Image (cartoon, rainbow, N blue to C red; front, side, top):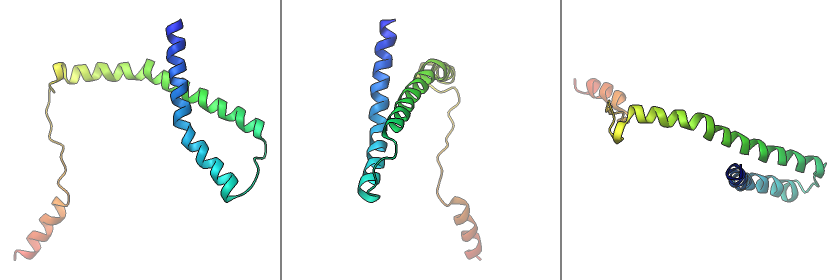
Length: 107
C-alpha cells in the first residue's frame, strides 16, 4: 500500500511539473496581455486540482492497463530484441514525383 502511495506521489509531482508551463502561459496572458484579474480564483484553483488529479490517474491507468499489453506485444514481435519480420519503412522523399518528372523529360 505504501508503495502505491509513493508511486502516486511521484506521478502527482510529474503532473504538476507537466502542467506548470501551461498554467504559467495562461497566467502571463491573463495578467500581462489582458491585464485582467481572475474572475473566480477559488473555482479555478479547484478546477486546476481536478485537472492535476485527473491527469495523474490517467497516467497511472495507462501504466497499469495499457503499457503491460504493449510490452507483451513487443516481446512477441521482438523476441530477444530481434524482430520476427524486418521491414524497411524508410521513405524516400519525392520518389513518385521525381519518377514522373524524369519520364516526362527523358523524351
